[in-house]
Image 1: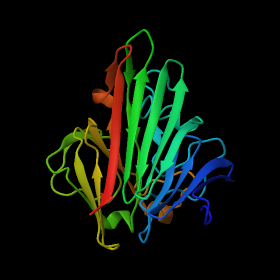
Image 2: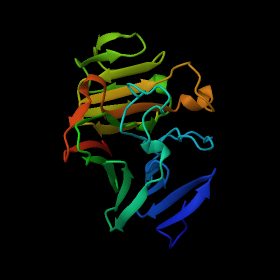
Image 3: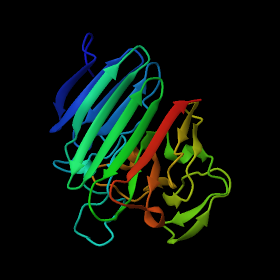
Length: 272
C-alpha cells in the first residue's frame, strides 16, 4: 500500500494500473480498468473485500466490486459480447479525489458511445458506492447494471445472510422461481436474483463480524457463490473465502431509459 506521507499513489501490479490509498481510517485500492474498488480495510479490521490472487492478462479482475454495465450477465442479443458488459474491461477516468479527517471521496467516469456512467465512492469507517448512468442517445434503451461485491469471509459455508426472509426471486442454478425461508446459507453453491433491495446483514461468527449491507434503491439483491464448481485461476480453498452480495437491476427488472434519463444504483456497507 502507499507509504507514509503518500495518501495516494499509482502503481502497476500484474499488468494493471492501481491507485493505492492510505488514510488514517482505512486502506483501499482501485484498478483504473473497471474503475474497480479492489480492496477496502478499515483500520484495525480484517479486509471487507475479497480479491483473487491471480489476475488474467487483458481480462476482468475477479474480486472487489466490479461494475457490471450496461448489461448484467450475458447480453440478451449478442452472445459474443463480454459477460457483464464493457465497463469492467474499460479504463475509467479519475475525475476527482478529496480527503478529510473522516474519509475520502472519489469520482470515476466512463463515457461509451451515447452513455456516460459515473461511480461516486465514499470511504471511511464504512463504504458507499453510487453508480450514476446518463443516457444521451436519441432513442429509448434498456439498461441492466450491478455493483457485484465480493465480500471476504472466514468460510462461505459458515456465514449467514439475514434480511431476505420471505423474498421471492429466481434461482439460476435450479432454473426455477424461489422464495427465501429464514436466513440464507450457502452449502453447494448459490445464484439467486431476489426481487428486493434493502438492508441485509452478513454474519460471520468465526470472525465475530457482522456487516450491514444496504442494496436499497436497487430492484434486485443478488447472491452468488460457485460452490464446488471450479473458477478459472481460483483454487477451491481460495474461493471459500468470499460470498457475493450485489445490488442490481437486471432481467425482468432492467430499466428502460428515455433520452436524457438518469439511473442510480447504490451499495452501502458498515460494521454493526
